[in-house]
Length: 190
Length: 89
View 1 (cartoon, rainbow over the protein chains, first blue to last red):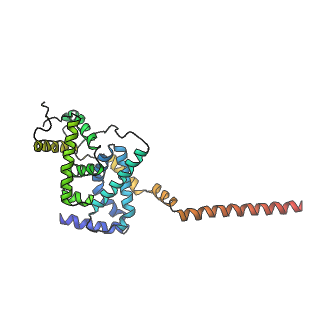
View 2: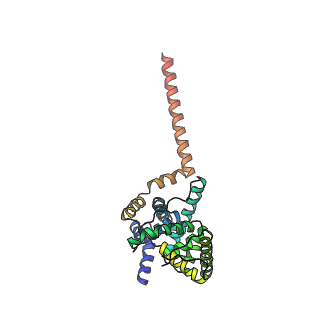
View 3: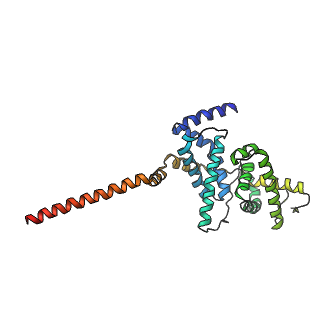
């Protein structure tokens, strides 16, 4: 979509000159994606909302310094989100709160309501398992499945090559499979 | 419903796991209320601005020094007034 990309460049240029309306357009475009990312990393809507707000507040403050050095604006936003989520996890571990809180399942786009009940228990188990993975592996899975990004796009956000992302993805799946076996968790067949 | 055993076939297991991940890690839709609340917060970053001003140590030092100087001035004036009134009395 070259027209959209061109528009984004223009919007970014205006936003970096302090144009709040332009920043508002960027917000509209990315708020859902950042919320999704933070939601899956934190596991609750309350903190996801708070951290998403902070991501955009920080982005608004520093957008003046944003220059396109081969890193797309979305990747820049995800990096801010990643850093804030990392701080959030650090603060929580310092406060010694129990991280395994209930993970409320928000209705996914296009879900069948009659399957929600069966799926939610299975999903909760799998989500809990995902949340025990190292942060970069969690990031990878979220960006791949929730954000539907290619390895190259993920690489731009994570600061890795496409090949490195592919390799990490494979290792992550193997680790998850082993964890499922260790915990005797059987997923239902489709 | 059939339960599927893991490590049946490694490639098959990975594909099966990918299918489940795709079913679990779906994009969620933040409610309109959340998006609106977020929008309002981002338009009014007063709390953050105030906090950032307090993290500016040089400004904080000037404010603190100004308050102290003001207090000293008030005390000096009050003492001199008290002294003058005391002498007349």
